[in-house]
Length: 151
Image (cartoon, rainbow, N blue to C red; front, side, top):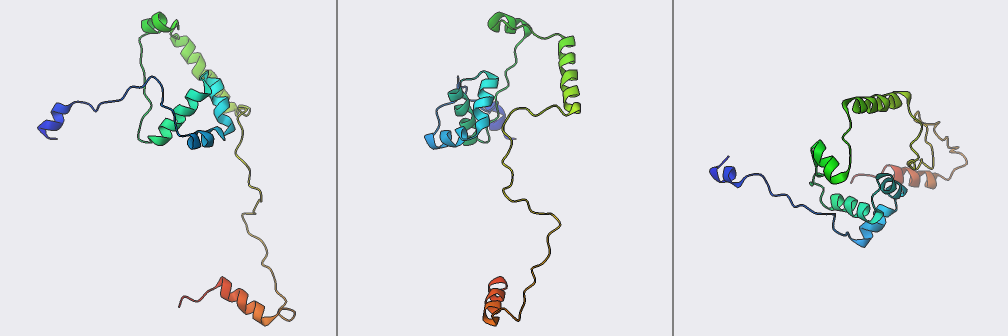
């Protein structure tokens, strides 16, 4: 590391109050997912802000989400939030683990689309062609189409 690198300090981070508006085409693509509106509602975030936040991270894939840390006193003073006790955290982790281990019921979010055609993984029986009833020129054309010459 050069002396100049040492004097620069940590990289500068842009701090935004909220994500900037995104391109309307990208907004439409994000809103096409039915889970986006459900997640915004679950998180208590206005849908427009949530879509802009998703778009921001799509447009800036190397950006890491900010991690804000606050003391228990600041949480209570500024947000009116009581910090959880050790026992509450432990109970929450235990309940989360129990739910995970029990294979909790589906979340209510839309599942991925299923394949329109289910293909057997073992393959099927090969089609047999009656060469006596089939035009030889057609068989040659099919073979040439399936196995074209490399020359």
